[in-house]
Length: 563
Image (tube, rainbow, N blue to C red; front, side, top):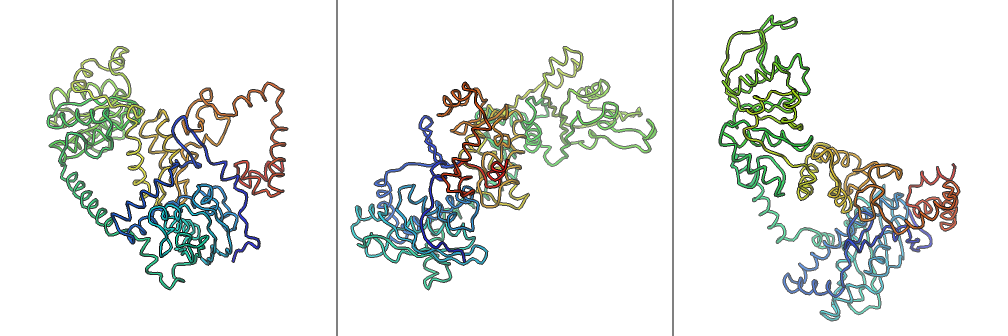
């Protein structure tokens, strides 16, 4: 069992340093999570309304679950700030956060635990509980303990920390007339009234009914999608609600009822193939093949054979006749990505397909009728390619009958949270992991980012973030933007509000000091040495604590001291 002989709260400077007031942007940050300052009297009003509308027991369960989730969030934060989770100093982040948030003053009385064995016992005194205060103001002295949110917080924090269900109870409460509160925590199964205590942390029947209703609606929506019923506002298998993307969906749906050739234009990574598949799935050809071809990936001397097939003996190596992509797509849709890369002979053959609906295999003289809907795509300006002699003018006119411009991701920022949710679900299933999603600050950074690689870059970032993040943790900014770990990186840095920008755009309260230092024959090695020495002094020689003060890991601190 891990026990701290003299139970005192450690210094809280490492926690306080994670709080940022970005008042210009209307945000408060705790590490990468957005926080709120709320009047305790308002919480009292909410409590009163819950009790009045739900009843005492149901309100108790609601507020305990509310506190439980808050405790879980802070336990995740604690593991990041104080990674040595087996020590009492690391565990006491929870009581310290209770104090820092103005909820209650905590004095630890007894604390024994063993994370590996799952053993836990803790006793704490609470003074000046905000919850007792607001309850007494609204209802007067209670007959039973009423610090429900605080108990939920302690239980949630400790359960996350220990990796098993730990429940706290109030053995005395200032809300019932005592001078202070006293709580005891231990594994759920060690309480005689375990079933009653755990019931408070289970979802309310009302909430269960809402979840069941939501599940039925979700199932109905999926069935409608499977039936391929198009809507005016959404494209099959697409994610997005921004006006720019909805305009694309509208154009594609109008084209789906015809056989018109569609030309998709847009930057690399905007999702042209997804749009092409959506067009195919909402058309009458949905049950027929959809063949996607990236013309840039096929060597010029082979592209004609790949697209239109080859006759046996047409060239060395053609040991048998075989069909091409167009024949395989007969009756369905063929998607030609990077169509500007087609060779001159392939362009001529494609023009014949579009004009006459017929083709010949390479080395063959037999005409074959073909019924294929062509969807072409390019990230280049085809009109400019025509001017340069790279692309046939007559083919350009045949392809450009129904052009659709797909907007880059930076022009549909409203869709980023939806896309993130979509990719999180995809890669959680792929890697059999479950993260807590994206931190608030990371979400803000992703929305501010310029996305040169568009949706493909976003998907890659989400996949990398899930790989680098442990189970039941939030994905932070450094998991998405590894370059942020290097202060000297020339491209992307993060401002205090989480906005990604160039170095020339960043501002901070210490900018003037930095300018001053750089104008006085600044010695970086000497400055770092002084900073390390000062941190070690403040931490009384404790390397781990000094590392926390500097916002780095213990191995990083040890390396710098050795250097």
